[in-house]
Length: 158
Image (tube, rainbow, N blue to C red):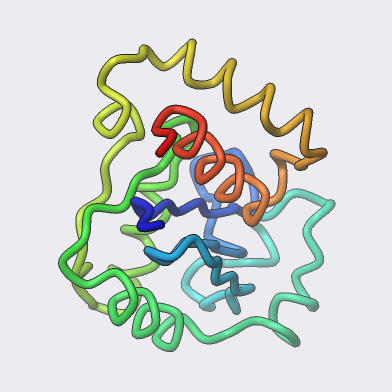
């Protein structure tokens, strides 16, 4: 089965100064890719993160911004990528690309453009039911993207 592609980004804080800490996106076959993102010094990571974020772990295990951007552009080139529209996914994605003076090779759109017969409230209710049933943690980027793939399957049975 061929799927639309979905993306979600975790940020260091819900505040305006938040920066990307991890990202997950799906491929047309439904498989996921996920990476932890190494902070850029310009993001002032030690000052712009919730206490629950392990900044040292991001530096130790994170992938560099340019490498993340390269992989995103390679995988998503020319596609429309759907986000749940609840978080600041687009702003944080733009921050990532602008920090390294790169251009997105794909479009980002809210999931309501994909599921035009449903309003955001009903989409979220269905997604939350799916997440609950499959024991997905909607605070984790992988599980958010998985829940959107399952939402697509449920609304587009074939």
